[in-house]
Length: 585
Ligand code: ADP
Image (cartoon, rainbow, N blue to C red; front, side, top):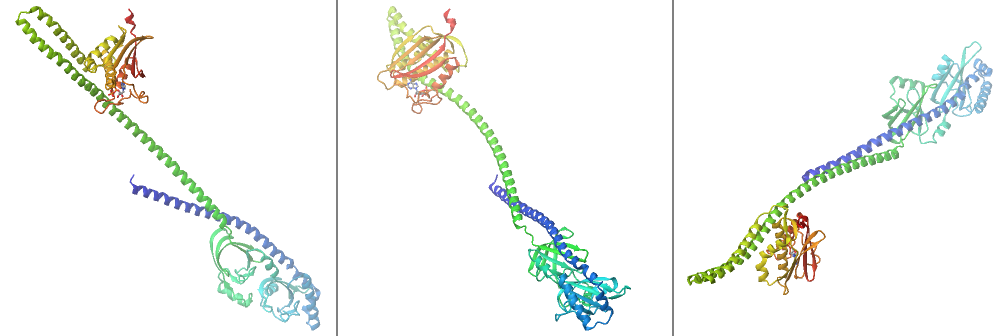
């Protein structure tokens, strides 16, 4: 694989890991955030219910108060008749007492025109007494429907509050005026300020008028129409309070009344979980705004998802790497096997060639020896033939006949030598199992090496049991023996004492042929290696290291053993072959 492709592949994998990690982390964070917010929204919705209950209970506590007071004959009488200073004073004090007892903010009595004829706050400079509230919707509602309610900022006091009104009628049910109780919510707002949530109450037009935090009151949650503005001006509901729009944008919707919303509030832009709860009885809406607390959960989820994703990626990479390695290993095993087979084939061919060349080399050496062996008798014979001719010329027939005898012997010996050479050079087929006498094999081998043995002055001691019948290939066994003898002669070449001992002995159903020399033996470390192919200690060009390896193979082929040991200042090679039983007969 080219390295640029590998780099590209690595780059792609890293990119995939990074993109995958950030995607999975982002997705997990989003999911965790959403889940946490949904849980938060459910909790907020329950809390909102509790806040609504508190508000509702507070209002309910005073709802019946104006109706009950409207039944007071003193009030009815006052509204019916002319209101003197004493009457007004008495009424003021009465309302003040009741207001104190009921713990409401203010109590006031309006006549049929909406003029406040008595009020609990008569002592204050901002008292309602003497002001006309005929323009206020709650008065109009009370006059037409018997009761009214309205949240407004007090035009006289400037203090906002919820006005609950009930009609004061005479016995005939004629409208005389209205009894009004005003509730203010500073306590409630203070109580709601405890938590970190923002709590708002908005009217039907979406204007907030109760808030537990500064800056959130008198905000328009939705745009006001022209009619709305005209009506607000007329009823002076929020009087001089400036109304400021509150910008907000829903981001995620959980339910109809629950959204994740971005709000441009008085404290800057922030995201809130915004819960709404309509308060049916008053026509208001209660709002709860809570900052989402999901950063930690989201981070943890993102980390967990990233860890899972990375684990999966690394597991996948690990598995693919293992598979790739297994594939590579399989491929290299096959490649190795193929190479081994190829090398084995080459080696076998080379070995076969070497065996043949070793044979040819031996043949060459023998040819030289033979040439020398034959040359000598040929010269002698030529001289003897000359002598013979002279003897015949002089008619000395008897002497001539005598001179023929050595000639004949020499010819016989030469014929024997060439015969050996012919049989040795033949590429003998393996596995031949002819019946043969080991002693004869020794004779033949010695015959071939006779010249060298005599030239080098080697003493030969023979202890041959004969006949020593075995089964095998005579030519090959002779090759083995020549090899053993030649190695022994080589080992003794530079020794002063040269002795060769050849034995054939019977040994437990076998014939043992041993060749012992006085060449100094073999190094202990080499003993186990002499039968290895190409192991030689001879100089380059003199030894191929194949002789013993081939010999070993030949002997084993014939069902025997070839062993070596150091003995009495030399090496002893022992060749054992099973006795051929037919020889007994
Ligand atoms: P080569 O004769 O070509 O070296 P061989 O296989 O016939 O190959 O012999 C291997 C080696 O064994 C020889 O080089 C020699 O070191 C050792 N060896 C064999 N016969 C004898 C011996 N009779 N004495 C000492 N060393 C021997």
